[in-house]
Length: 133
Image (tube, rainbow, N blue to C red):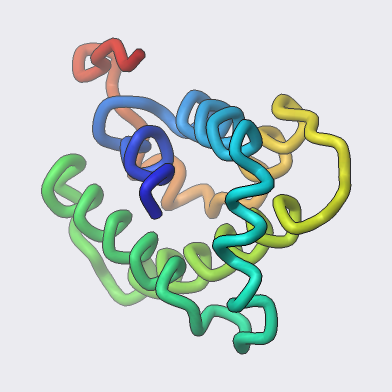
């Protein structure tokens, strides 16, 4: 959760999806061994029952409401709740695995599962973009 605050949680706030995913993956893979150890006890948890998807869901709702001023209707709530579980499960699987990291491919793969409605709702208009180092 600590690493998520720098890039992943900034999607829709100060950076767009592509930068957020790429930079989050870059950061987390630099500390991949630590990450594996920190999540080793969640491997047998039921899908979506760990604290990480719940935290991710709350961050997305906060971003939509406070940063993008999007109305959270029934469908958007469903998309966010479902997507936050899927995103976290995929990231955990990748980072637990022995697969070689391909930041560009992993970023593109993650982008391909973001629901279009959610993706568009969290886009930052060019006039809102800020530089994030």
